[in-house]
Image 1 (cartoon, rainbow, N blue to C red):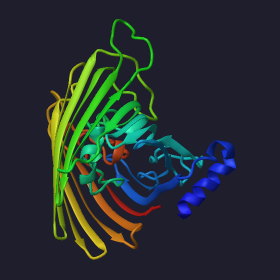
Image 2: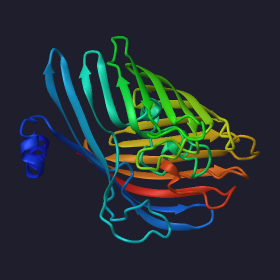
Image 3: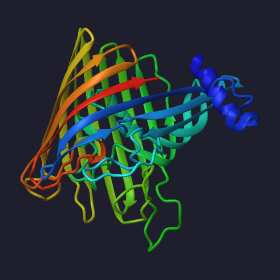
Image 4: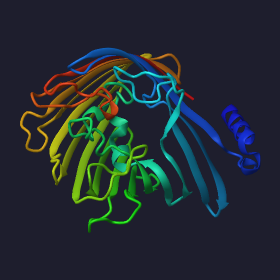
Amino acid sequence: MMKKILAVAIASAFAAPAFAATANVDVYGQINASVENVDNGADSWNRMVTNNNSFIGFKGSEDLGSGLKAVWQIEANLEITGNGSAPTAASTGVDGNIFGTRNTFIGLAGGWGTAIIGTHDTPYKLSTGPLDLFVGTLGDYNGIFGSAGSQANSDLFDLLTGNTIAYMSPTFMCGLDVKAAYVIGLEGVETGGNDASDAYSLAATYKNGPLFVTGAYEKHMSVGTSLCVAGATCLGSGVNDRDAWKVGAGFTFGNFKIGGVYESMDGDGAINIEHDTWGLMGGYQMGAFLLKASYAQADDVGSTANSGTDMWAVGADYAMSKRTKVQLTYAMQDNDSNGVWGLGQGASVANGKAGEAVSGFSLGMVHSF
């Protein structure tokens, strides 16, 4: 209730007439801050990170009658240290930014599901996300899944995309739901006889009691080196296609939870990203403590020999309340002799020397509101 009162007060202060008829605006979010010591294989340094999935959001809906409602959401990343860009060994300056767009959309919802347009995580990304026990930390599984082994290719498939049209089904009685999205990757004329860079993403998930099973497929058509990713520059049309599929499963029994993911990636053109990745995750709840570990392996990328990696992470979460916890994490990306894999979301700790391991300790605190 206090969230709704605060949201209406904020909205009224900025645009009272426009928000006067909005009765159910919710404010929500998360602050995830950590102090870390990281080593990229060439140098080591200390850093403070607050955009470990830190964000603020506003959402609401309007009943349109006959079981139909309008839905909307606005989310933005938060950077509370004052560094406007991703922290590095040489980052300086204080900007105090609220920056970047997260899931921000408008759409319609009913008993048939939800259809939206805007910016949103792809179904491919959403499919196995619940299996990541280290999300938002150095051990985040996006250091290896959705990646092709370098900072330039670190966010190929687990994407937040702009220009997105998406559909999410309701959960059927059997526990199954499906998601689909189409991304208009390039809003402009086709050049040089090449098609525009569009994409589609599909996922299905089955949840029934302790069992979780999911599968997803995504294809990017006629891309240069990147799709139109939210917060990044949309590159021009190209001639290369790339696609990926993955399956995941999880099971909870007593205080134990286990999971696994297998991913296969392929693509043509000058940059060959063909490779497979698999990983296992596990956690044990012991009172207020969650002890957790993960291991994942990626094989050689394309035709480059010894370009794979082994990634592992161990950690513990301590729940101080239902909404506040402390996290301790150690993670390592153990590169093969030609491997250039980084650590963390978007390879936030990029590999500094091919073949060298990338590692880090992290102590952080998370509060959800």
